[in-house]
Image (cartoon, rainbow, N blue to C red; front, side, top):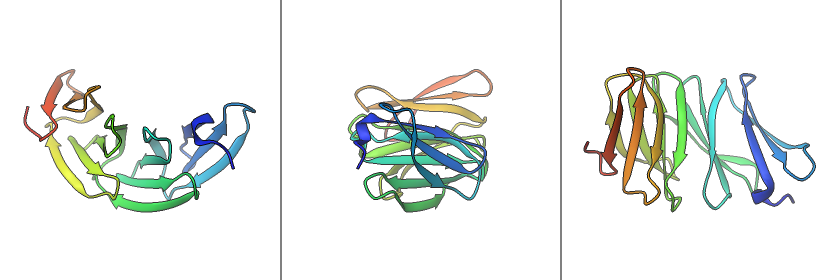
Length: 149
């Protein structure tokens, strides 16, 4: 088995996320999606990978088994970014549909942030207490993780 901490991942328009060995530079695993993979993020412990796709779906992958543990239709337009909370219990996805969604690792919704414009990126602060979204209109909004601005 490959140590997860020694991996890099790439997203691709061919509907695949690929895991690469940093030691050898070779592809060690291919994760299949039904749509273009637009973004991805490793969990802080390196045991899971979350992928977002052009159809608005998010997949949660168990990297130890190589299997997809959840497929969630989160957004109505492409997923533009994914980011994990520092402690790893939740992640945020952003989308062209003008929302950012905070979810737990089972895929259950914690909070929906309505930005009003396509969201290019969403990221947690280092302490996990706030979240920033960057929108198409060049506005950055800072949110309490509970959902208020």
